[in-house]
Image (tube, rainbow, N blue to C red; front, side, top):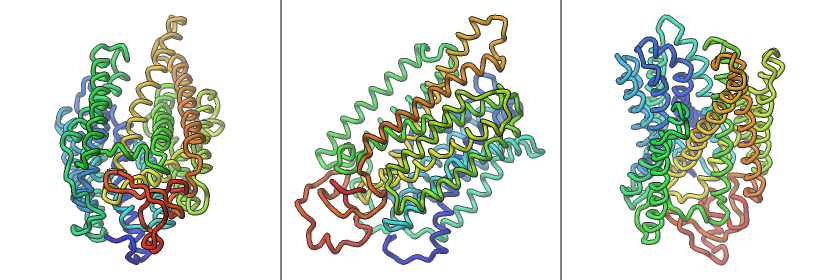
Length: 530
């Protein structure tokens, strides 16, 4: 597909809607499982210790396969990977609706995670390939960014409603199957076919199987061990979890040096290490900012659920309703952000978004439990959505660091940062909350450990932790992202030109051929904004 081909506004809307709604369904499942898991556990007779496995295994399968499927998308084409992943997602959604026992449901949900890992990076690659650099692309990524939190929170809201309805929790998967199938059919009709003859937009070196195996093993072990610390009685002190975390870190370090070795020899790589030092890309700062922003953002969604259910003692449906301001504000924030990105510098937008996260966490840490919802909780839920503006800006900035044949992989790298930020954030924050609650309970032995008073002490500590994570994100952005300019704008000064796999070749000045390059030419700016 060619980004320079004229496209009607109607087709733009269909392309954006298809990709954004499919990726929104991925997040819808996460939210729905979170609120419906008690009902699922009762119906399928889950053991207490296994109750979180459907949620955990989805995140595990999703996170560890992102780089792998991102690179495959660059090899076979974004449209092909997107549709295959979405068909897979629809098929296993239907299977999960008929799951007869806990084991079957866990396996089916894991398969769903693989489908999400396949279609999400490919969707980002489709946007970069279809829309030219500029306002249309920025607006598209604004809508895509809105779909992530909106999908999750809609899952929380509708998951609670459906789980308590006559069709029970199985209705969640029926609804998901129907929508996934509809958008697959729409995608077949509106998404441009992959151009198998284009050297620019296809990764021709093949798949780095060694890197794929190491990335899946390293990220998978790390994600699992971090998730397990939140449920293990001894938390971070659990011996086998410490071993798994150490093994995962060793695998990822080996993966890094292995990729460097392959890239120096111009071999296929899963993640080109050179992108991290590419002039103008600011990859370390972007990924660091995203990591801590999502630590604060997604973990706040999680602890807010605990607050409403374990402190305020609200049922799932009432809990879900209280997230509605976040949905509304997330939609408004991303749509406005997609428009503002066209003429406002990226750094002020990022700082404004992360500041909203800081304020949300601060208000939560200081919240008056006896106050009405509208006095404090409403503002926490509303401000929380501000950080979602970071998603489209970060995605565009990361995509700009990759060559034209690696745009799906770029999406995979970005989303891995958000998943690891969420996994580590939930694990660390939950451990801090548990430790503070335990210490408080020991000094007040007459209060049951599960009482709202004890739980709330830990949740306040969690709020302060998330405030700290958001402050770190703010500082990284303030120092590391200076000079990024208007994100998505065509560079005016060229100091290097991207090559495949993130290699760069210095060029002294803009050649006559480059001066006639189309508006969406892919280059890396050394001193001008990307």
